[in-house]
Image (tube, rainbow, N blue to C red; front, side):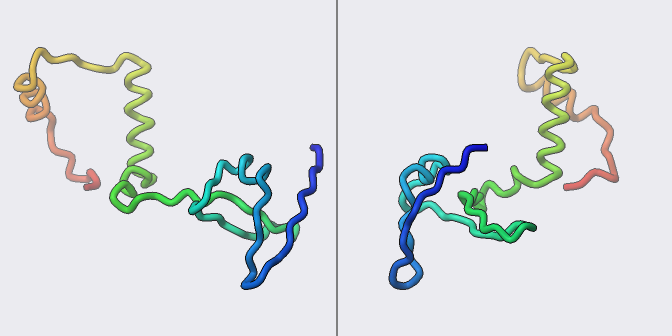
Amino acid sequence: MDKTIYKTRLRNKGQVTVPQEIRNFLGIEEGDDLLFYTDGAGRVVVSRAQIIDPEQAWFWSGRWQRMEQEAQADLEAGRTVEYANIAEALAALDEIPADDNAED
């Protein structure tokens, strides 16, 4: 791996300017949040914080992502049913037995 070094200076109040090449690499812009952490080797790692909108957090839950993967697998395997209209689709849903162990 090539090692490219970028120099910057620590300013008042702990501020630094992130070099343009690093901003491009991370895909960050003014106002984006950054995460700083140390790895097992004692290096400081900087990454872009991927903040999830609280109104969309449900989509990123482990359970929801598993269901998304199952649905995608069903689509790819052709395990789908097409209905002529919404009434027919709703009637088919009504025929599915309730699963008392299902999560909300």
